[in-house]
Image (cartoon, one colour):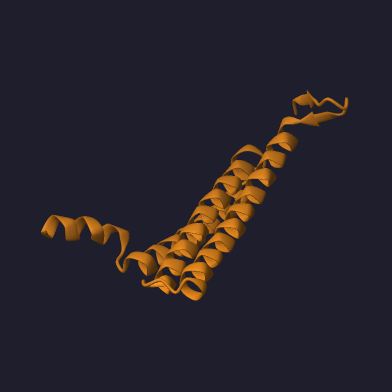
Length: 130
């Protein structure tokens, strides 16, 4: 492994740096999800409860929450790819990554169907018919 020197004088290997970067990306995903959920709930409370403005606030909340989860899932997949490809390139870790990507893809598609009311590939067919 190639050693990299940090300012404190301790040597770290490239895989350790990559693993640290993946952890930072995972933390970023959690922060994105938590901040987006808090912002969506605050917007829902302000619009629906305090201001009592017209509109479908529950649907807006669902859309905001789903978008936050989708973005967080994409960032988490990126972190898993970083770790699997750069640090733990074993058959077992690649299979686990594949399973995680399949599960997260299914979750993403489920959220997308919930938001738009149809599968992603149906959009093209519907637009072509019009």
